[in-house]
Length: 337
Image (tube, rainbow, N blue to C red; front, side):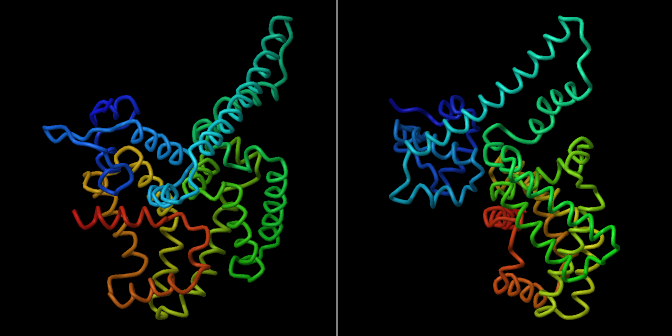
């Protein structure tokens, strides 16, 4: 049995354009063509699509998926086992919520008024994380399901809070070391996914309940961002001219928060339509290059020095949200604009 591209897209919950894109990048090529030239997919093609979509749900970039599947040791049974583990976690979380709801119902039926904490716990379980993450993604996040990870994070928040309370500048080396540890822990507790890091940061910014529980205030996030910015500027200074560093410092102070929002929009765009030729993709590419120009300037030699710094300094790339597949998507979108 062979499926046409439209039928496969419908049954897989994807768009035809997505399958065309997978074909164009060599990720999923159809095994045949009809007399009219339509793509035709067989059982092996559908099995490979299962692998691709499973890995996408685990947060793997498209470029990395191709490399992973090309490895001789790539195993479909192992991948399905990971999906089963994710579902087991989802079932466990649903069971926790069911138990909480049953307890609330029992209290109400008995004429008792549940404590405020019981209502809040139920509401948090029902809403906060579900607004930002799928159950499969929550499985990747130690900060969500690992008590030791949450304890480590609480200690880090307390240490940063002490520096802030003491009025120590973000440019202080001790604060910069703490900020580097913050970013490394952030990446580790987000399962190493730049996309999940971005959504966690959005959650901290928007959810008052999460800020209260975690102790991560907007001021603390700004303090860490300033410390990381100063540490990076010290590295850039080995490559960039003093006047260029002044431009970058102003950019970090005024527009640094625009980067995570733009990267989040890019990931959302790729998820809904992976074609760089889409008008929305071209508009995002325009915004990205405008923001990059505000940071580095228009001089070709300044941009070359900026890229050389990133090529030579691993610290500049540690914990970065901008992955190689996003950069390639932007280049293609910008070239077609």
